[in-house]
Image 1 (cartoon, rainbow, N blue to C red):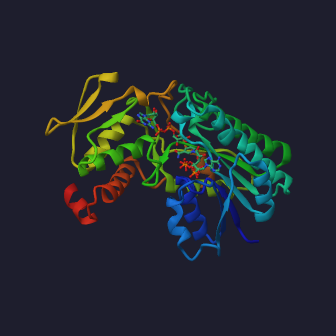
Image 2: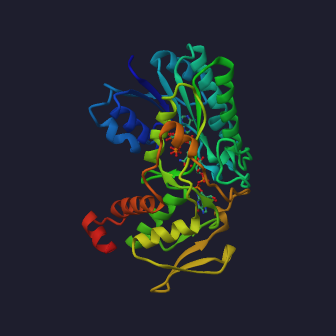
Image 3: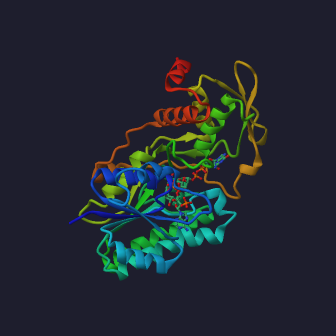
Length: 355
Ligand code: NAP
Ligand code: GDD
């Protein structure tokens, strides 16, 4: 039987890596894209321009909040696997657009599951669940599949709904439906307003002379940051098992926002000297004394998830999944990509600079 994947959120970070991964495995890949007033396909532009386009790679206009659209597309495409990656995925912004987040990140999962069920229910379903489910529940860190949920944002609450409705369809209709509970994963394709990419872009711009300083919010938040390319393989592995189940993907290595900032500056040979605390915290170039980092309360959230650290033991044991990029490797990869793209230096110049 031909493998046919339907990916919602194909224009996002994970959607682009997953598409590359599945095409390399011989899948036909269908992706849903939203209409924008400007083109929004930057992350998959290289695939659109490749020989796959309209042969093994197909795009369809759709919005995951539009159930009739989903129903028709599932009926037309007849996917063997559905990867539900679409979401309003920014935690901070979910406080600004809570109702839309509930629709796009929560209820849309029900709409897609229902479209699959009504069309026969026999394709495998991946739901992009998240460590934000655990939110404020830190006591049993590293968090694992059995850790209780305590979402701390409209985004987290919407993802809790999606998690449970996925389990519910698995149990009620015997559908092969899985939750991948993924801890933060980043890459050079990460959205520009997530903290890691915001940091690497800002450093590249500062070195190019087009930005003065980097302003951040909560510097003490700890995250378990992995590489997105590793995580999309985990999604695919979850759909390869005899029985559908839910799995954590994480690195079990935690770092604060402050540590990520230090590590990114270190990649370009700058050592940060920290002074002050909370809103008064500042980071200076140890050598020149120039102010490079400060704190701006604009980037604080009404409620914060302070500590996320994941235990991927079940995925490692049952799926044979293993991350290939560690924290240092991830920071290096992201910093190099932004230095080449933004600071306009060549790979050779970058290597020279790092010596
Ligand atoms: P992302 O870069 O923000 O991509 C989100 C995708 O969803 C984009 O393609 C976006 O389309 C699409 N989308 C948003 N609202 C939509 C709507 N109403 N209809 C159709 N498409 C819509 O997110 P990501 O980092 O790739 O993450 C993928 C999924 O994993 C998300 O569900 C996220 O919540 C979840 N997750 C991510 C992480 C992580 O660390 N990256 C960890 C755990 C879980 P546009 O391009 O048109 O905006
Ligand atoms: N975005 C942002 N911008 N975050 C900042 C900043 C800033 O200037 N300063 C500090 N932070 C802190 C946030 O408060 C948060 O504690 C941490 O940095 C990480 O923020 P994000 O990079 O925005 O990611 P996130 O952890 O909130 O959410 C991401 O990971 C989740 C999985 O744990 C997203 O990808 C979610 O979609 C995903 O579910």
